[in-house]
Length: 451
Image 1 (tube, helix red, strand yellow):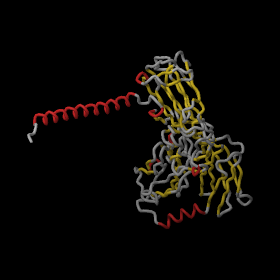
Image 2 (cartoon, one colour):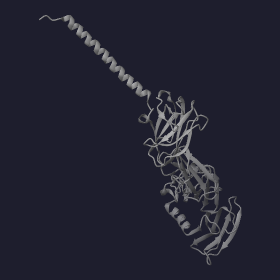
Image 3 (cartoon, helix red, strand yellow):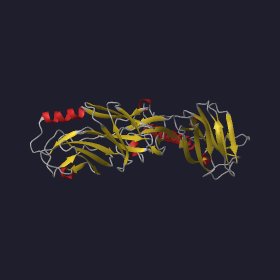
Image 4 (tube, helix red, strand yellow):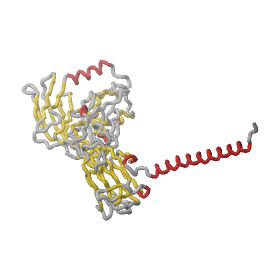
């Protein structure tokens, strides 16, 4: 049998030709389908653009969609669909087409099943807007941007979900309320709020009633960053949170007290080492202190010297009649940010004798201090303050009150045989006072505050 190679080749050529045509057709159809799919993206419910933010703004053009969306008037137009998931706490939604839209627009808001909730046409000229549409019971809604009667073109849409301001949505965390901060730079923390854009701290000085507010990105705040902050001061702190661009109401008030601040001679100089006349005596540094007051007592002459410095040191020869073979006690008060002085810190001893004072000598000095004491209470006080004096002897005691300018306010002579507790301060103006209690060679200074 003779094979017809010519026909065979012809048939192969026909098969390859048909296969090429069919392959081209398949690829073309696939590409066309993809193109049409992309062309008609968000043109119907199934291709709606998903969005769940509190504020959403975008521009678009509806002319690429088929004119098959039926509005409330029964007219058909091209449309763009948005599926808006309700944010937790949201009660309503607003939609605005008034800016960036160049045709006679129309808005629909539909429930999850596609049923129309409300619509608008011609709110701002030919453009549309819906305000505060209630969606509090729905998981999501559809927003449809379309035209009045086959209208289409460019549009700009803004979709805003509205949170109802909650009274006291956040507060200072409970563990910090009615407490004193460990450090002046310690953070005050608010309770964390989901989707918060910021936290506003309102801080009220409980004495002066001065108010400062500061906005923080995070939920923590330093009291030392407030204008006019001070040590040993009670404040009322409230916090408001910002969500969806809106500051909500302040939460419950919380009382927080800043710590007091005391200092003493630095450890390397405390304990009666030798201090030459030209040496500096240093206090431990206190952050934000405006100055330091050094109270130096000469245990040989019983002379008291007060030195005020803007820095934490003074030169030993600043003490009047600083001489050898003498030892001194030094206590230091810190100047607060409001120019008042805080209570004195611990006593330290320094020595002008080149030979170090023996431990027994220091013990003797300490015993003298232990045998005589004066305590003021309450401090701060509102009306009167009581001075409780304890002594090993019944010798008369002199009590002198000075104001912050060093002026003598009151002088009392006290007989300890009759009464060891005296009452003063009833006629004092509001302010800070130094009470000097002296019996023979023993002297004690007490800082008191009348408020």
